[in-house]
Image 1 (cartoon, rainbow, N blue to C red):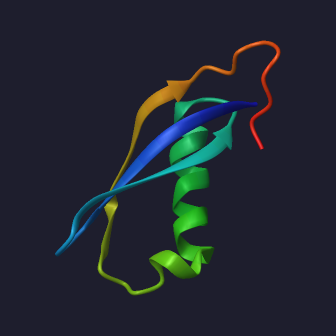
Image 2: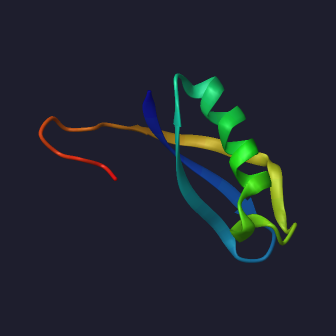
Length: 67
């Protein structure tokens, strides 16, 4: 699994960023849409679901833990 930095546009506040785990970029967009639907932070409804996109793939360095 890879980690991806995602973004979604809010109608009034600009852009919000979050991370998801997925196998590839296409899967990351799908997982991000599911994440946004289930997360209470994004439950206000003022987010553009069509604006979800991958910013970049995050590299995990050996010897470090990402929790």
